[in-house]
Amino acid sequence: MKEIFPKDVYQAEMSKTAPDTDNITLEGPKIAEGKVVHIRMFYAIDLTTANKTLRIGYDRGGVNHWVKRKAAGTGAYGIWQNQTMVLVENEKPICMIESPTASDVCTLVARGVYL
Image (cartoon, rainbow, N blue to C red; front, side):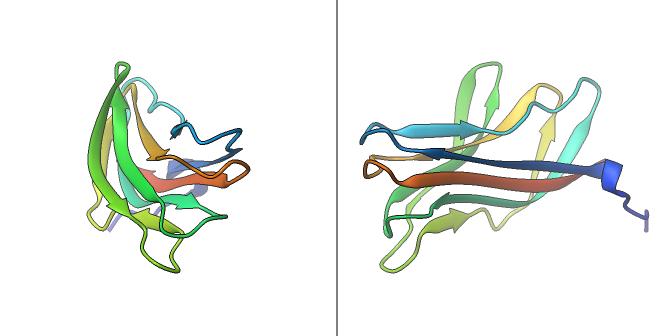
């Protein structure tokens, strides 16, 4: 098994405060040219309001591909992707919080390993 070093880890953590109730899309950094990343942990979170509908996916060339859309549930603030995801150069992980309450703190967290 290959030993993993900090330089081998892809990490995206971004937050944005919702100015109003318009959908918010958050994007991680693009995968570098010639690189492949195995995303092992991927969360979309509304840190302020429970039971919001959230989406998880990836962007390829400006086109959003959603792989999961779900209401977080009563008393829950986020959703996650159970299956791992492989992203290639110029793709990036994205999430959407649908109709957040104004001033909600919306967050994307994605971590993986460069292959």
